[in-house]
Amino acid sequence: MIKKTDTTELLGLNKFQVDEEEAHIVLDKAACAKCTKKPCLVVCPAGLYTEKNGEIVFDYAGCLECGTCRLVCEYGGITKWEYPRGTFGIAFRLG
Amino acid sequence: MSAEEKFDAIVIGAGPAGLACAYALAREGKEVVLLERGSSAGEKNYTGGRMYSHALDALEPGLCEEAAAQGALERRVTHEQIMCLSENSGMTIDYTDGGLLHRAGSDPAVEVPQSWTVLHSKFNAWFASKAEEAGVALAPGVRVDSLIEEGDKIVGVRAGEDELYADVVVAADGVNSFIAASAGLAPAVNAHSVGVGIKEVIELPESVIEDRFQIDKDGGAARVVLGCTAGIPGGGAIYTNRNTISLACVFNPAHAAEQKRRLPDIFQEFKMHPAIYPLIKGGTTVEYGGHLVMENGWRNVMRTPYRDGLLVAGEAAGYVINTGVIIRGIDLAILSGTAAAQAILTGAQGKALGQEYVRRLELCKLNDAMRAAQNWPDFMASPRLFSAYPDMGVDMLRQLFTVDDGAASLKKRLIGSVKRSGAGIMDMVRDAWRAYKAL
Image (tube, rainbow over all chains, first blue to last red; front, side):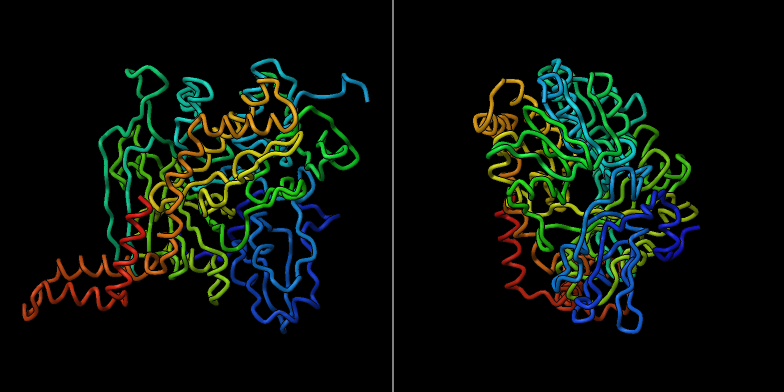
């Protein structure tokens, strides 16, 4: 059924091969805490950045690998942004 | 290292640029390895999307028709549509000439569809199978970590523990191109120069799609949408695939970061807009994705897309055009990948190879096409384009169709539409001038 759908449900439709051993995006939560703008909360198509008690909560598992968070991050909160290791990550069936 | 272990070329990325390059090289007997980080070709590729067919036919006459016959393409575009949305209303312009054909190759009698809607993963999987048939050694599941340099020359790539060597490395690793950046070729990508795309692919029976878009069995519609991005620079698009509809929105990340609404939420509102929902109702969402796309046209294109031993092709080199109505990426990627292969096939080496590549990019008219569209980003930068003008256009139609007590003349009511939009006369003159310059 077509309805307003949250990103968690939408990501559940996709095929992912999650790399349990290595995170391809790593945050420095202390740097994030100092960031007043927090653009990552807004721009991520997968809605993976959320805020809880003033702290950024992020899970790389549903990442669509677009790279937008890397470009808008201004305060050095993202200390690592790589594509997942070979075979891992999103596997678009349609693209 | 012995001579036998060295390839003629290593191509990074099995997207349209990398595949075109590897295919054109292998066809001429070159030993090419194509490294792809996905488990199979196509898994990491993303489009809105449609593909203009000329580039595939330039790579090999008839290739596009072959792709279509083998089910790698969705629908040939016979209807071009422009839609404007305001909060609860919408208007659509539909253009069709039944064909929208372009001339294939040198034979004026042979015409093929100008463009096809595509699902990129499906198309690329097909393209990769063609490349493998031609002799390309496709190595999926391999992420290239770095380039190997000897002196100033790039001689190979590292992937985990493995090292591979070749006469030339072609970086076709897409919009984020970490490889080109690692080679010191300044990447144009930043939060201002790109768009972030969000797309839902929605499944519906073929006949329902044909009825709703008034297309026949062999036809398809491509629609661009203005006024669906909550005022953030960007726009929407709808493409009819065989039995799915691609519903997409692109937003400028730098502007998005200046406001508080989450882009996925704005996208969901677009999906449920009263002028959009009837097109997709009863459907089933089958995939959800996001991707970056270059938005600055010629200004994003690398002027020196090479170093000794390295060529950069496709979106990694900045090849995307967006005029608001025409959005081109896949065809430009194929052209640049083909140009890279042609340059390599001349046998040129070192800096001369890079110069030959640039000469080929000019020769195939790719850079001409980029330059012809170079002023579009100025026009597209007008904030009025994304809310004031769509609102005004839709409101003018509302006035045109409204019957009331007849107290106000239509002229007065239309002027009211302009006033309500908030766009000043001088702003409109300025935007019209920018549009004229962009043409």
